[in-house]
Length: 104
Picture 1 (cartoon, rainbow, N blue to C red):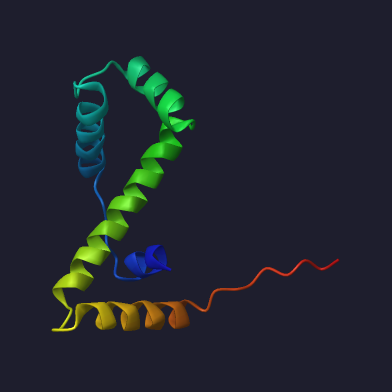
Picture 2: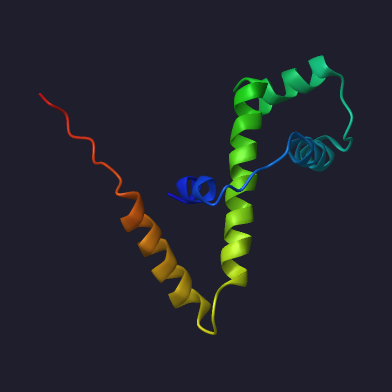
């Protein structure tokens, strides 16, 4: 639902923002932000158990949702917990998620 809303609001995350976040993660985990391309790919596969393209796509989506939530926090009134809860309910209703029901 949050991903849908972020796309609805046309929130974009640039390649540079993804690279910057990867450098931050590498510094936090490895102590160094610079690895060769092969070392980076091996690190992603070992730590996250997925291909680098998948990891980068998920990271981009995470950053998009984080930006959405930052925007939402700025729009909140005095009672932010209730306002945030109401906002999430409105998003859920607008998204109209489908429930999967097996046909068998």
